[in-house]
Image 1 (cartoon, rainbow, N blue to C red):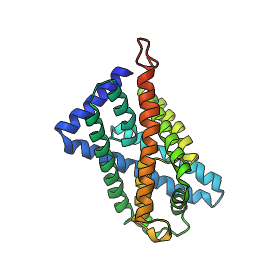
Image 2: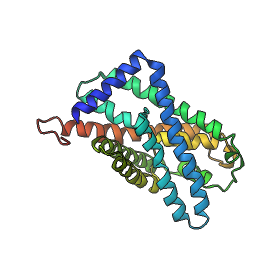
Image 3: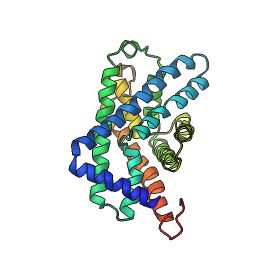
Image 4: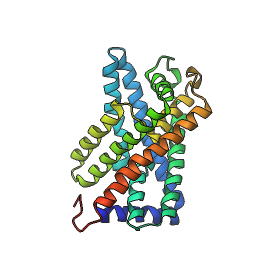
Length: 259
């Protein structure tokens, strides 16, 4: 596992340094895929929430993970999984900290741009151009913005612990069908509990911005930026420190924890 993470981090650094545009596009694709997962989950959840809000929530949690499945299968660059990979590799001195920070910030920026690009296109489709003010998507984003900062912070930590459990598990599982089942099952937990993931929120907030932002009173520039920044830090603690640094330390002996 150590060697695999080191190799992945070195490849990321090489692509970032020598073919920056290709790295940026891979990061944009990841933002697009996750936003598409959010979009279909929001629409389906809205249909079922009229029957029972619990069913709507479960449908959302079952469909959202397919965005991450797509990122894994198509090798996109996702900032929240990079938090784990880059921190682990930095601790092991496979790549310098300066490179790790640069990769993470660039990946986050282009995840955002990819999310905004596909949200802009979706906002001009017939379906998303006619969402009612009571739609599940608007209620979900309003709920996120209404959270106290403390709850938001811990939601962000746990969210990226779960995301990186899914990433590490997907690396270790070789059969594609088993890999997909594992990822969907783990991400279901994060979605059903309503935890906070900064890249997923890039997509959800962008969909609101390009459809009907005025329907949510708290949807202001300041609130959105504060939410993203706080959740980014929390995600780093969960994915970078707890999972990335934690497993780097566990695997620093001759008997590696995951080998």
